[in-house]
Length: 190
Image (cartoon, rainbow, N blue to C red; front, top):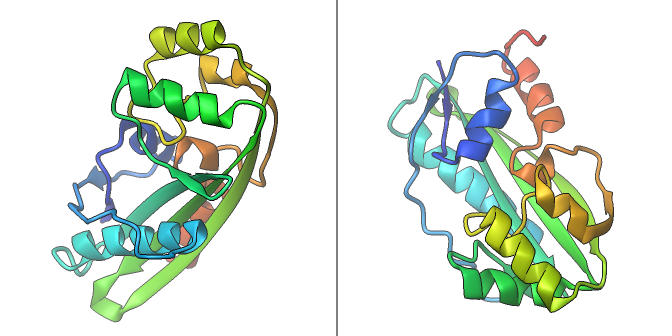
């Protein structure tokens, strides 16, 4: 059995690309950063915590936990939740680089297996005008996305460049790394 420790539609859609049967479960973990916790460390800790929350209830299942932390000049950019916060995040990112740390954990509690991998994606925003930001936010309403954009949609128009080893990591689940971990667990891909 394979369980995705997430109810994110973006992560479910990405995992479905692999053609493996899986279930989704809400991990209900506290996502608050610890004092002075680095973005990458936070992403790793939360991916593990999410996997552990579900694996403890389903010890024989393989559980996938994932988390993404966006940082811009030392400021963490979470999910904005609404229009004003999304506009503020995008305004802060204008002309700057935002680094996305996306971690994935594959865990099985029955034999204390826990593997972790991550991807770092660098997104260079172009200089954005206020009217562009408003049009984008109103069109795509990226209120449930860290950094306030959807690179798989109209958000791609906001950037000068993206550097990453895995383009799916920016959407929320690094499939290249995940495939390696699932093969290690005995799953057959493709």
